[in-house]
Image (spheres, rainbow, N blue to C red):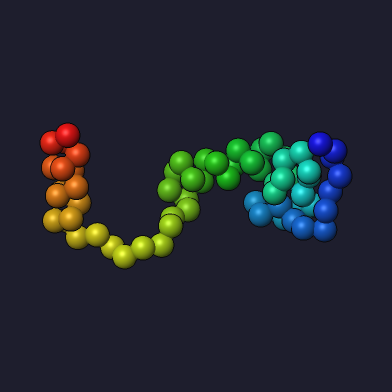
Length: 64
């Protein structure tokens, strides 16, 4: 891969993207994005689960 940049920007710091780290500009921004996923910085939308649904899922998983 080349280190060419595009007109699109890094979603973390808004600097020009690097083809090597696309869609980010650097390894640092790539790692920051991954850390946000691990730290619940991002969430996939869905309906809230009730405590009963959560408890039922835990019981079913423990029963396997």
